[in-house]
Amino acid sequence: MKLASFATALGQANRVGALLEAGNEPVLLVDLTAAYAAYLWDTGRDLAAADIARSRIPGDMRELIGLGPQRFESPRQALEYVRTRLANGGSIDELRARDWSSASVPFGSFPSCHVRAR
Image (tube, rainbow, N blue to C red; front, side, top):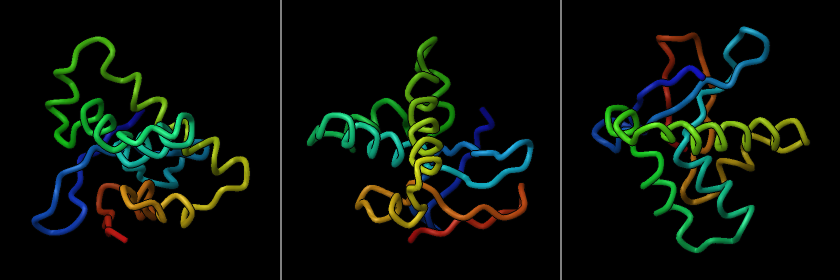
């Protein structure tokens, strides 16, 4: 899993993302916290999905790494959720439509990609 830190907009919250690749080519930069919140909502209709996601996938990369041995379990679930949704005909716009999301944003050329909040 290739991780990246980004801000949703100038002066806004920092986020941790992961590259979703097709072969070895990057396709999307996935906002892992937003994607995990969507995953929690879709699998259990948990009203606290956004809060749980923020606690398991903090916006600061150092905090994520400091969570210990299980730190990448939730990010992996989030990335797999997006991968599965897209493989089953889901759209990027559908993932963005959630209020906690930019679950995924268009990916440009890394590392000079520009991430925009929707």
